Amino acid sequence: MRESSTANVKSPWRLFVGTVIVVILADVLSKMVITALLGPGSDRPSIQVLSTAIQFTYAENGGIAFGLLQGDSGIVWGLVLLATLGMMVIVWATISSATRQMGLAMGFVAGGGLANLADRIVDGQVVDFISLWRWPSFNVADACITVGVIALLVLLLRHEPA
Image 1 (cartoon, helix red, strand yellow):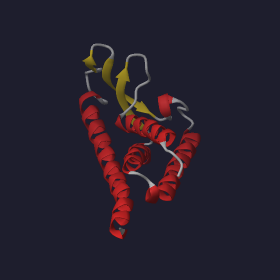
Image 2 (image 1 turned 90 degrees about the horizontal axis):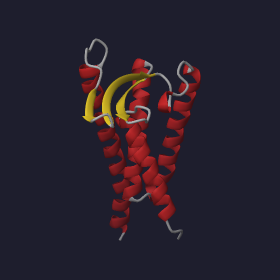
Image 3 (image 1 turned 180 degrees about the vertical axis):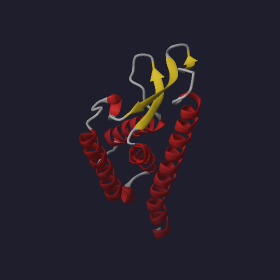
Image 4 (image 1 turned 60 degrees about the vertical axis):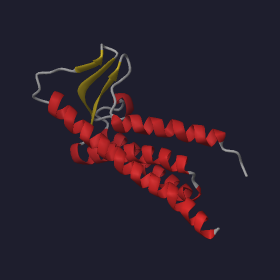
């Protein structure tokens, strides 16, 4: 009985860490490819994936979500660090009692956040490239954060108290 409870505790943690690593790698690789194909010096403005509904277009974003707060680097850094620290506290406080699904969802959020944080540390900005019709452009890390937050909300709303 004790072994299975130990395995259950480690399982969400391993899934969390594995997801963080996969998300960071997917984000870094996708940005490398887009920068090589569409970045500065490229004569190609975009790649149409599904007519004009979905396009890949290189864009540098020094702000936060949807390009907000462009040029306000102090505020951006403060918000990024606050969000990162908040996520670390939430993960640390809940991972031991989390389900595998929660570990996966938290991994998506943390991986996306850390990938974008790394971009800001190295380049002072992130590269956005996925454009959906009239929606502001975003990247793989942003998509993972969004999916992870929605999954966490669904899991928390479905959770029945003991």
